[in-house]
Image 1 (cartoon, one colour):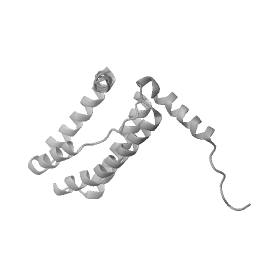
Image 2 (cartoon, one colour):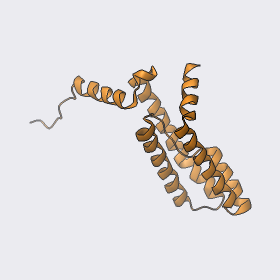
Image 3 (cartoon, rainbow, N blue to C red):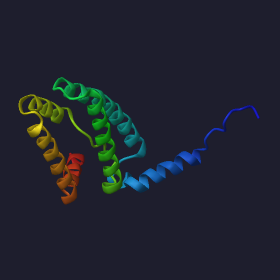
Image 4 (tube, rainbow, N blue to C red):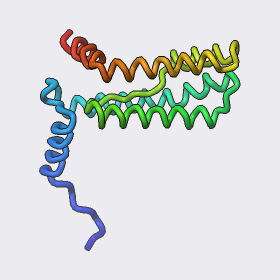
Length: 145
């Protein structure tokens, strides 16, 4: 026993790729697992950037930075896991900079009532578009272009 772990067999990675393909239907959407993994890595970097920037924007409006960071991470987790399990789409769903800027500016002006309502309204519109099938139509029309 030399303490080194055995190298993973090619069958193991192929089995994982088939599992991802079966769950998300990647080949039925005319894509490849490697393409989706590269896109996932890029999206992860973007989400990490937003996890730093959004709390900073909200902190300028007077929100607690730790609470804003926690809320941002929780929204990313809930949105992404919900998208993966409910819609079976490999998409990251979370708060955006535009919504955070809107909330921050309205927090300054209206002490949170209008900004929170606006952010909640955007989340409800997204959920309704997903449930009605409009989001999938938009996704498919973008892929065809």
